[in-house]
Length: 429
Image (cartoon, rainbow, N blue to C red):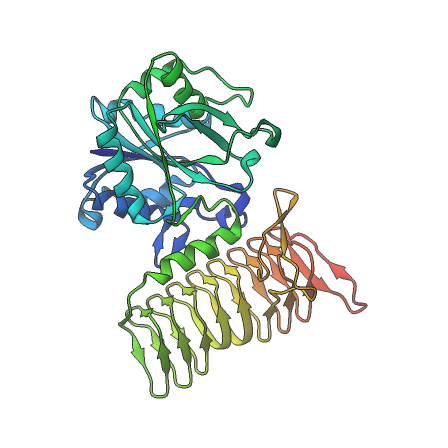
């Protein structure tokens, strides 16, 4: 069977993380999100994959190449130059698919590998024109909600319905199987009020006009996340690291304490006095310690330096330096960031209430009691700076020494306190 992966979008709700990397290439547990999906498809027998690319497509193409030598699957690409909706993106796959059934999935989600196996098994038994995976959500008004009949076939798909309509809480989980009839439905799809060709409209046309059947498969008791919001990355990271196997490929000096499942990559040096508590992942050519404290559910990329500092439940991307007396908790630190000595990130409110974060200019409650900060690529902080919980620092920004960050900082900004304690935030030149 062939597969089509949609990976053209940017993921604006994850900014500043996605300002330098497309969402499907965000690293989780040593691999980009997209690689986890690709390997899951390969493991159920998929041998050819078409990736629909767009935003920063060169990063995806350079990493995956033709797929054969690195992943043992054949990879092709199609570029969606205009973002005219998911149905428009899927239409690029018509010639690639031909007369075969095919997997279709969004390239920016993470789920338990068992989901792929169950989707394939149910589709083979159902003898229908399509299958859609579904997930129960607490806020159906923010999703495309699918109504099923008694035989678990799709009856209706409603985009972001009012709670008063009582249409249930089964949302599109972004993993499908279809036969080629779906392309006929896409051809019949008109522009929506958002001026896009909506794939949900195409599926409804397949059911109503072309008399096709789409089976609904509800994901239960298995991990699934569309990584729609920054803290979802922490949840996805926890899921992957729980499954990690210990492998200490680097060098550990005397008096290093390692407990739990820990992966340490080649040419990484862990210096004396360091404590590493798994599960955690440390990449290649990194320097840890001396006297570093790495706590559970921490991901550290390649070429990083974590010195006499404490890191817990955080993602630290490659080429980042956290060297002297720093505390990082429940945070995401992007690539090529340097934290000055004494930089601390708060991850807990005094009142113990859940922490909110500004997403696309709106305050969104994370539902998390502990949530630190997000620091974009190529940014740096001065000594003894403090970053309050739930705050974001954009890419290529500088935080001055002894400065408290209590608001989001845009990209390319110099943010500091002057001699009178007044905050200044000019744009960098």
